Length: 219
Image (tube, rainbow, N blue to C red; front, side, top):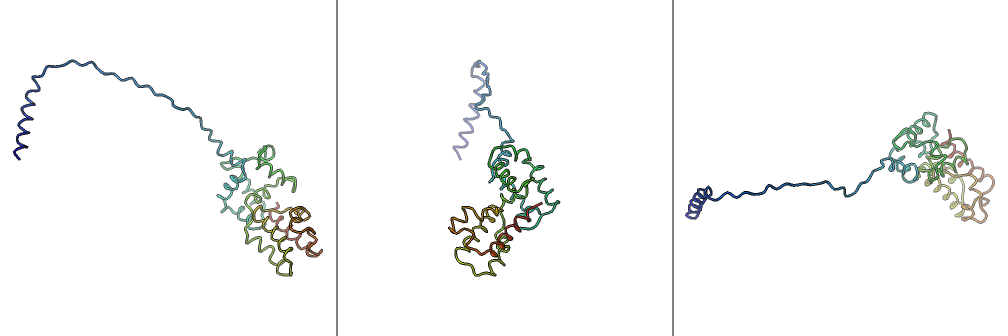
């Protein structure tokens, strides 16, 4: 307590002495700061959108963010689409933030345009529905349902089942299967006899299933 009183008395005494100290002139201090550009970078906001036009995984990602749209649900679930669905698909691709165009698909040289041009050669016309299905694939349940009766009504061998599974997996991953591939290398890689491990009636049934699945995306 006494120390506090002593300090207060000292403070008062020093305060009174401050007025007696000589005044010292000081030079004013000025500051002069300049902004320095460390790095100049122009961001091209359109680049991110270009990725969706040139990359199949990025375009698939975009399409799957719209998986609740009826046309996407139909394409993924092997449900036949109509003109209204096609219009919805056009709006999604051509009038959304990615601003894709037929010109991009037909004239660019990237994996997206190559996929489109491959399907155009296969199916002709403007194969937008096949193109989108090739990106998003088919639901496993829908593919299994399409093949259920065919598999259930026959006693297939292991090799025959392997061939059917190859076709089914192709639909699940790629959304489409080209009937010409029935006599291609994919089939021969499983069976040296190719599609002839099936009899004529079974081949006809298999071809009918493939055409039916493909036609559900036809407009």
